[in-house]
Length: 64
Image (cartoon, rainbow, N blue to C red; front, side):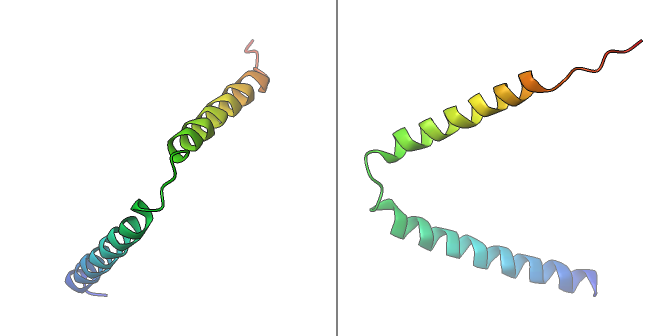
C-alpha cells in the first residue's frame, strides 16, 4: 500500500474514532451516578493492592 494512502486512511479512521468517543461520552455523562467516583477509586485501590501482593510473593533469585 502506498504510504500516503495508508496515512490518509489512518487520519480518516482516527477522526471516526474521535467522533464515536465524543458521542459515547455525551450519552454517558448524564448517566453517571454519584457512586461512580467511589467505584473508580475502589477499583484502582484493589489493583494497587493486587500488584503489591504479586510483587511480594514472587521468589527472588539469588545470584552467586
